[in-house]
Amino acid sequence: MSGSLRIGIIGGGGWLGGAIAASILDAGLVQPHALSLSYRTEQPNRFEGSFWTTENQELADRSDVIIVSVRPADWPPLAVDASGKLLVSVMAGVRLSQLAEHHNTDRVVRSLPNAAAEVGKSYTPWVASEAVDDRDRFIVRSIFDACGTADEVASEDNIDYLTGLSGSGPAFPALLATAMKNDAIAHGICPDVASRAVTAVLIGAGRLFERRDECPASVVETFLSYRGTTAAAIESMRAAGFEAAIASGLAAALKKSVRMGESS
Image (tube, rainbow, N blue to C red; front, side, top):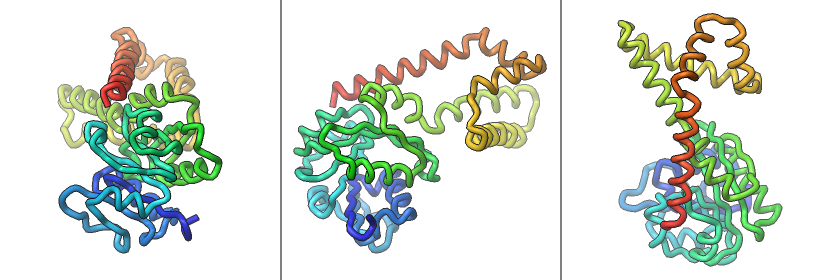
């Protein structure tokens, strides 16, 4: 594929666009000379041999696959004709029908990588329009597998929900880590020690889940069955509304995701 595929990333000078570019180059999915990237003001000093431009239509004309990586609020004035091209959006909220009409192509994909794309650990759900064929799907899977793992989901409703769940990337673990660290400091633990302890807990848990492919609910039940300190903590957190707070947060994220699409 890398011998003929040409990919363009609108917003390639940004954080997520740059992370995707680095991932697909490292995976050999595309060669540097076949990668085009756009930027706003100052050209980044990276991806030697790739084509940089401030003209998004020029990027589109040079590409077979166009990845749109801009903030949803900046998308409406993006006048790019992608006729005959496969267009992949990584924007939250913007729907397939909007993308197809705005960019004059019926081959559109809506996806949502997260911040872990920077380290090749993003989880990316995606959904495709009816005109997207098997070869297009292979390309999309290859792009997002290079960034981590990915699933084609059944509907845009799934993407709307996962925008708040997996699209959050490290945000929710960071929120948990902050609460744990602050509590440790309040109990007299040195901030550096508290930080190392919390980070080790989160990293260790992630690696165990990845290696064992174990159901999280089974892990919780295992610790509850021990009837030790962790069980006491879990029961107290649940009684304080831990699970209800998570559900409330995800509901708010879903509502925001849908609203963003309506306002684009």
